[in-house]
Amino acid sequence: MRNRIVEALVVALVVAGFAGVAAPLDRGQVEVLLVEHILPELDVGSDYIVFLHPAPLDADDGLAPYAPTPIPEDVDRLPYLVPYELTGPTWFAWIDLHPYARYAHDTLFVLIDADDGTYAVHPETWWPMLNGGPLWTDPADHWDEEEWIAASLSAGVPAGESEAVCEADRPGGDSYDWALVVNGWSTGQPGEAGFRADARGVCEALNGLGMRVSVLEPGDASPEALEAFVVRLFTEIPLYNCCDRLYFYITCHASPGALWIGGRRLSSVELARMLTLPGDTYVPSRVYVLLEAGYGGSFIPDLSPHSNINRVWTASAADRPAYGDLDPSFDPNPQDAGGEWTSSFLAALDRLLKEDPLVIGAYEFGREYVPLNMACRSLESLDAAALSGLSDPTDYLFSEGKTEDLLAAVEYLARYDRAHHRVQGNLDERIARYAEAPCLEFLWFLHNTARHDTLPAPTPEFSYRILKGYAKDVAHSDWWEYCDLFWEVFTTPSESG
Image (cartoon, rainbow, N blue to C red):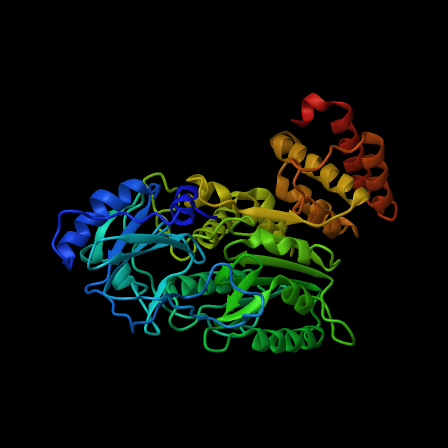
């Protein structure tokens, strides 16, 4: 996560004199020092913004990042301020190395002695706090060119975003699925409008699929409130005669292994415990977690051992931040708002429900999870941060041995069906023909949680035997023919591509 050149500078305590100027340095001289001497020594990358406080700080000023790096394990509330020791008049410059990213991400604190121009560069991963208040986090300041000493932005200044909120506890339609949407932003943090756009968009999309959606908005969000909310939710689901499929979506700032909900730590261990509550509490047997937060991959080791957590989609891998709205010239989704990953998910979902006959058919026959799963699998082609190589959206599927064989089997089967549906007849009619098969929902679920590129191809005999086993109680001869078609696929590889 650290910039290697910056680390070298700090480890060596690089301090350079700015010779030939009168003391104390005025703002103009500091700007020259920053642009002509300090920046060239740093590997700041293609995107950065340099800010300079309008006046030198005094020894009694409290300058600190919003949180130290790394955050001590016993710290459960932010901000947690560890001030720098200022010994005299000091100019402070802040370099945001990933202006489009959400926190935590690499930044630099530059402290310049106002008397002799010596300076030190300190790597941090949060925004600056001065005397208890944040600096340059308001969009009006952060994206104001008059506030910048220097900048390089590959995607320009993001457009403004609406701050409308999502209605809480929206009643669902025909679906038996349930969703919980959490906006973990808190007062004093940057990105309020983007997080609201995330929660609102996901809330409306899931509710539009017919799901019942519960929402936890800023001001109500904390780990304790979230746990109480989950307990209440798990209590209510059986009362609504719902099935046991729950989608859990959260958008917030994060650090490795921790989501920060309302400024409070929610560790990966605590999240796993909440979603697998023991005792008499009803626990959905199929939980899907969607993390619009940085370092999402760091949650996987603690989520994966739990049998009811079937899948986790993350906006980022274990070592990368998540990104807000990013609109480079090649962005395939330039009208998006909010987090880049979430907006790409919503765009992919909308496109699939309009254009993909397989997804449309599944949705019409009451399998709402199919479009959601397919959208998560295809969103990367619309995610400008991923296309820029900045983020790494990740799909984690938790399954075992024989199940993996069946996952791959159904994936190949669906690919064959999609490739040949014009010859075989209307695809929607074919879906309808098998809709009454008892095993179809399971097969739909498996197909749309499969990742054929990461699973070994099953043997034809084993896959055929499994499908026949699930079909043994089905009276429709068409289902048997479907299994025979599947056998043909595996015995004729050239036709299955």
